[in-house]
Length: 245
Ligand code: URA
Image (tube, rainbow, N blue to C red; front, side, top):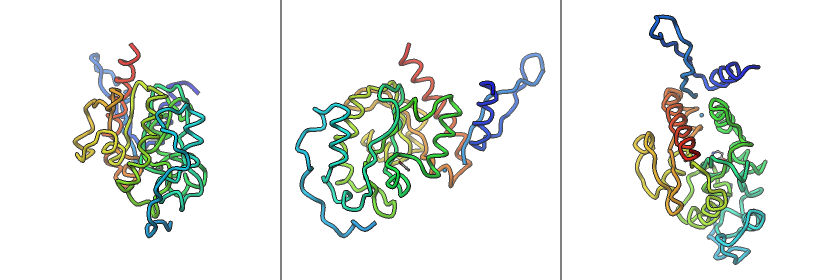
């Protein structure tokens, strides 16, 4: 299959209707536009006071960090998890994609974004010529919150050192925050995603460029927003390219 065919297939999977632009000669030029995309019981428990390991995540390398996450008991979510979801992908990737927290399927399989929203994320990546082996995907939380509720501030705070260390070890050219929870956590803001997308932010303390887009689960519910998500991906591609130059 040619690159163009693969791209067309990926865009089709995203539900993007390709449009055709007339070029200066009046001929129809097929444009790769697209745009996109259709997206336990611990609440009554008290948080635990400490981690199993006392090591500061900031001092850990990849294997130590992964082991620390797997053994973490820093918040009550550890009691309801099947396993932690550390993150997946290339540990030298240019792109870091940050989501919210594992859902039921991710908790079962130990990998982020493997449910319906994950399929859509894969299709979005395919549309820009990437796949999950060429990026790194992680979440704000490494354990599944019950009933897929939002992470609580104390849970996000207990987990923050792990994501920060992942960012420091990876040093990606670009961070793509998918959805409100990731954007708010990484940018320390409570601004709406609709107002955060479309510009290049700076993640602190890393100083790395960060682009915000909609969460694929939201896009599944609101397919009309897929075109904006496509614009966000194009912005992210441009930023990653510039960082490479
Ligand atoms: N949603 C997320 O934000 N992360 C996952 O890993 C799965 C769904």
